[in-house]
View: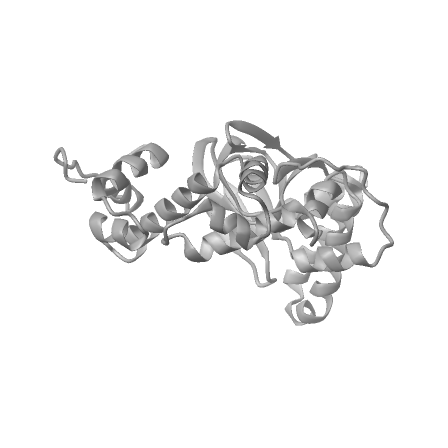
Length: 306
């Protein structure tokens, strides 16, 4: 058995034992999560934070802007900023579930490691997308195996987890995805400015959006801002805002039991009918029907009820 396989086997055992049913699970180590899927599944809407996603068993795929990014035990997914996407399970079964972990990236830690100057310079000058697929290395797997092993030693987490997390960030900056991460962390770069604009949008998505003003806020021309925003996220700024609005409205209806109209107005829509049309396009169902299915109820709405 290779060292890589033994590391994978250890991760499979640990994740399997802590995910008793299909779903997503937060762990006691900040930024670390496990997931389990027992069968293939069609793409579902999601927002992926800056993170690395490992599959230790099975296969998944992320869809961004119509492009698929498949990953498995030999390939990891990395996102360098908040990306609206669709997540799909390709290979899974009850006997061999799709198992893996998510690890949230600390962009400040990445910037500190880059600033230390002991990493080889990148030759990549063109703007890259905010999502990519990289090759899993033995060093990366070893770091994750040590981090996950701390779950069995909770008293050591506050002392040792930060050291291992730093090592994992270092391994990423030595990987074939280093350039993608560097473009977001470089404070004089366009990627950094787009990330700041996204931070603003996430806090102010219900407000009217004037792209020229947002571009000026991050010190870019409107044309340059629009071009690089789409390059990184596969969306225009207005499409990104709409995605944030619709997902927040979904959360309000599902978790806070808002009705369709109040959720629409809360997230910035002036017309509930326009909201319902755009909601249906994104999620594939009218709002009331979608929320009922998410709650496990089977209801039939009369025409026009949304």
